[in-house]
Image (cartoon, rainbow, N blue to C red; front, side):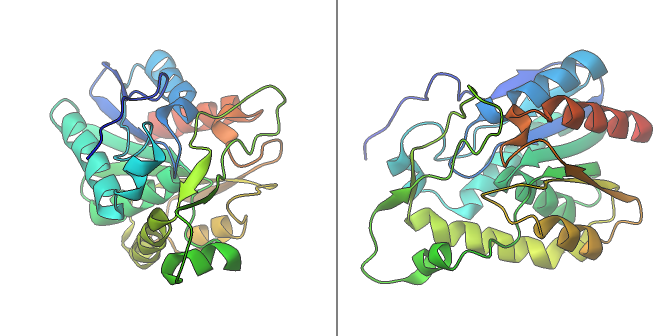
Length: 251
């Protein structure tokens, strides 16, 4: 099995800080580059200990992702959680796109660990029949065109695979399905971000997430000036400021 180097800019990040830990996850076919600004902001402005794992199969080559599973991605995030647990007294989790899905999954699975979750354009359904046909169809191609760099601000590019490995499609459907059923188990405070104009994740996800969360302390924030990759777009400072205030309030 061929191994591939990590793409420059896709490396995991870790910022040592205080006893408040924040886990920041990137999304499907993406890299840590998409969430590094959020991570650095929280570390610098809040003094928090921040970790941004590279999900298995990401940031190298699409062939790697084709061999990875939803369980692999979850394990990548769990390992980052354990790193924070060894250093911090309070943990929070956020993420973009599938990283937002993972931030909800983890908050549901580890309700005793996380003090707050902040999904950003998280996906629990896609409302995309063409994509759904790739999950269990026959005679499928190895890849389809990628879904990255949905960014409103000119001149900004996401570091992301140019294609989607088709075997990974069924994996994200599995993750979304499990996470939907965990929403009611999420009891920690939550702040749900959603771009009003999102060409990757249907904006209806956010009201669904908000409505079905088990949390009593929850807020839905619409992003009016960004597309899907909001953490690299015009609203990135707004997102960072809101998450910083959210964590400060709870820690």
